[in-house]
Length: 324
Ligand code: NAD
Ligand code: UDP
Image (cartoon, rainbow, N blue to C red):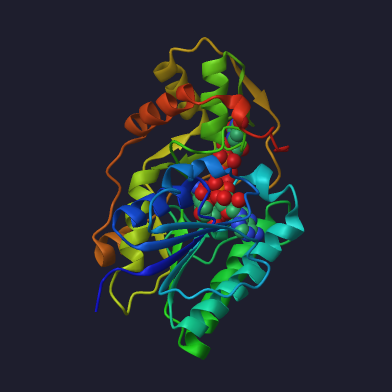
């Protein structure tokens, strides 16, 4: 049997999805990219359109669709707080109804399906760093719940389709990932700080800036996602994927100022509700089961990301979505 597969990537025009499509097309697979372009634009994948093994479909995963595939990567979901809070009910529908539609397709086709879950399922964690066994501390009624609880419910759906219907599932919990092709106005901290630094605007630190995040470069993340899809049969996850290097937002701002040579001032803005105080992945499981660990440090990854931000025309991107 050929090792080349028909692969569906939902959210395939997004930041991570477009890089995943690129990698799978280069590996020779027949790739269908499905996206409703809510937080992305066609330009992320136009360079793939003339490849014979790439196809683009404009569709919303909350609506049924019938395709014939061997594998599905379900990445469709707004990921930045400003994007997922823009229409919170739609965000929940995307994680829950969208997952049901994609799991139904996997069941009908006998396909393997990978869910892009998130470190947000740990909420504002009391356990640090976070291992997969930690069950999390999410405020079910807060402004982040539409994303966090949607992704938690999606994990439940994946496990129930697996247990009840024998669907071959994989779950990855992605920690903060950055790199070229992030939406410059998505409101995420790395896009905000780089955009602000290179345009000489104030750098907006929310709160005192002592909260921490662990940032993974996109190439490492794509490699981890692909290894998980193709990993041992018995290992379905959830597995943490992220870079354990932990930085405060103040440290991040100072590093971006240094790397851009910017004279921007640091200013403080109110901390958004339920903003997690700290976050760092325990990646022992990914190391043991997938032989995976990130190789790109924050400084090297930021240098590449800054170069990309300098190369794009901001006017090409749709206006900012409110992020507070
Ligand atoms: P992104 O916003 O760039 O990509 C998401 C894509 O999904 C976009 O192209 C968007 O248009 C599409 N989409 C949204 N709702 C849809 C719907 N209903 N139907 C079809 N398409 C839809 O974000 P990203 O950073 O590339 O994230 C990709 C996935 O990884 C998401 O599921 C996100 O939750 C997960 N994730 C990302 C991070 C990160 O730091 N980048 C961290 C944790 C989890
Ligand atoms: N943040 C910040 N300034 C910004 C944008 C974000 O200080 O302009 C902070 C935010 O409060 C959070 C951290 O950076 O503590 C990461 O935010 P992001 O939205 O990138 O990701 P998430 O909170 O989902 O991890």
